[in-house]
Length: 269
Ligand code: SAH
Image (cartoon, rainbow, N blue to C red):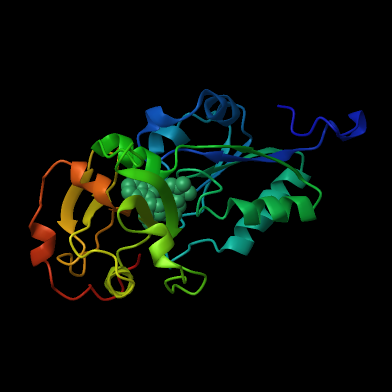
């Protein structure tokens, strides 16, 4: 594995870090490059959203570390992860950091890359299918469509301190646009209030996709004004807000509108 072709021959013994996107769940969405990199790993450090089948692609001799990241409940915090990456690479190992979706879409891949650069560790990135694309494909919602949606925006509802980050909503939501919200369920009531206050039409369709591309995938459709607090379960969930969301299968159309119970204590994302 050539980490950095600019390194001199005397550096050849040095290890490095690969940040590898593993897609939204279905292991078959892994790229061939990711597969090659995983097979040659000395150390594999994975997060919670990575399918066990993907981790099992590593050599039996590879050391596997579960970073077990869970929104709000990290078993290894980000600086501990950064330190591990650097430490193993400095020891001359090929370290493969497996991340759900794409490393650079709400995946903190940029922070890990910065940590490697700061420690003079070679670091390369393998892109993955981000949840928005995986969920769109799995549920048959085209994120753009001629005449219906000419722009798509990905946002997170989970800012640095868990808050809903500020956006100028009329520019990114409404007719003709698709808004995809990661980590959106916990902040949904606030997000919905802000969208309605910004003049986004109450009848705009919303799809809630849980575990997109996985065997336990579900998709529910609603209207912006009807969708109350969403029950949170263990699965990752994505909100697609825009006219294209009406193209999701009409499963559970009314269930979410009825679900008005308070969020479970300690629920995250
Ligand atoms: N880097 C990842 C995103 C990590 S943030 C990517 O590119 O996809 C984690 C959030 O992604 C989850 O809380 C959820 O909002 C979304 N997500 C990841 N996988 C998902 C899936 N299979 N179905 C629905 N949402 C998913």
